Image 1 (cartoon, rainbow, N blue to C red):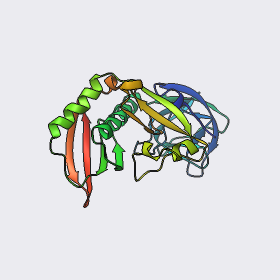
Image 2 (cartoon, rainbow, N blue to C red; image 1 turned 135 degrees about the vertical axis):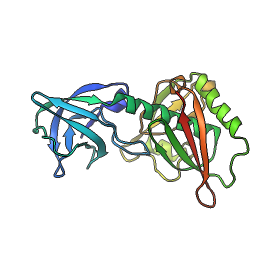
Image 3 (cartoon, one colour; image 1 turned 60 degrees about the vertical axis):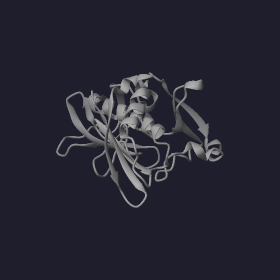
Length: 239
């Protein structure tokens, strides 16, 4: 099992770890991972590992068997030995853009309250696919509503509920194509706003900013037809 440092503190940029395994493909497994493993539309983190006399570039992070997180190194670099202490250094600028975009997509699902059929997060932009037979009539109004939620400086927090509680509240699940991460007995919820100011609450395992204001101004990008009833909506960071 790999401890998830990215979840306990998504703003952590550097952290120690112990090498617990090397996979047959040359992936590195640590006791605790600063690196988010790709999933839920969010890419795996990148960065570096360093140890006395050596180091390597982390080009991706992926989920392994059980609760393991595998760090994928660049080819041709020497690997650390099992049991060796290392220092993890995150490509923070890239991660922070993913955090801003991921939170922005939660807001997009608020201003377009339709079932989500897919999504992807990138640096500076992301997209959601909606079960939307007709394109929105007023793009400018949607963009204005998005930016209004950003400027309201709403807190982004997490809660946990049991698997059974989620099953009893299926309306919390907005995504049709990706099931919430269930099976461990409890599920993480991301809440935007609080009390009467709450605008969103949904299961999510990704990394997010602390407040909507940290997202910065947004631009609504392309709205593309993807199948008979699907529309792909892109949102972009402008700063």
